[in-house]
Length: 410
Image (cartoon, rainbow, N blue to C red; front, side, top):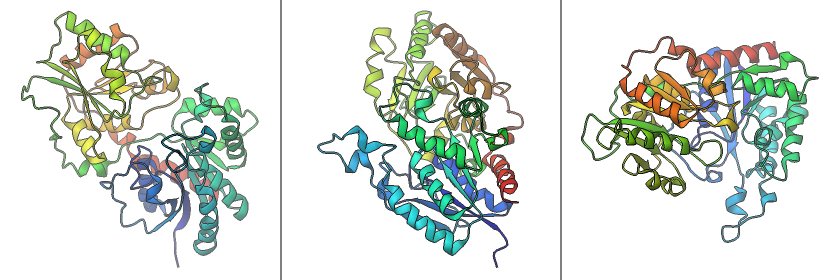
């Protein structure tokens, strides 16, 4: 007889999906077993993902993984690369509901989970969990992570009422809702003032020590360029950038200031963007500022290689504009674990700025002038060990989740 409680986890982001959100679900599932919980994963078929990464392996201890079919609307319902916006409402994987709900009911009947957990940023996952919870009467935890995009981006689309309808059902019907920042939790408390405060929980993202063990503690990394100059300071941004909310234009102006002052040049400094899909939009900004020789855009790599590259860099860059004031990029915690200095281009009072408060070797800046000063400070600052980084680990975050689950199911 199984002595552990069971948790049915509804998540689109799960290996081999190549997404930053994979880590949250995967590591919760892995470590919950140490807190008396056995995970049952309900996710999608591999073909639903546009990009996959097979470097991320599912631990052998996660035995119950079930996949049901979903179309990817922007790909499967397009004609010559074009599609109607309504086919992506509330998200590209809305068709997953029609296979996941019957499968979920079957899993509930056969495996008898004690609680249901679902995770955003895919509204359909919450929609599936809502139907399963209503069908079974099981308690339900909704992991919102970040706010629904239309809560912070007015240009979020003409069909936001559907996302808000799912959001309202989730907030009112779930036994608990979890956010990754206190700011996001406070936002939703203000949006739903009639809900009891005990329903709201904050469990931040984190880093996984096991992923760094894979690197054997080495700062070897992949080669960032063909330049063998060991005196070149490399500032790395790992992941996507875009014009709204994560725009590096102010940083480019900072580099132009420093170059004009003869503080940096191609021999002693390089800014590397890894994994930018629309680099051309930003490359066009470099020549007018005379910094083409200081900035490099490189293609994506798999997850483990990205960690390797972080470890090999001199400093790490986060760009989180005012649009995302209530959110913290998940990779920030991996940045902290690397032990490398961190430059955050973000409002100082934002969730990202607050997350870095008290973290050694970190700088926050909002203007090109402040960024220029911060870059100079990072280039001069000695690298020292960070204290108590374990508090940012996925294991500690899972301990928090286990306490929430125990409270709800006891």
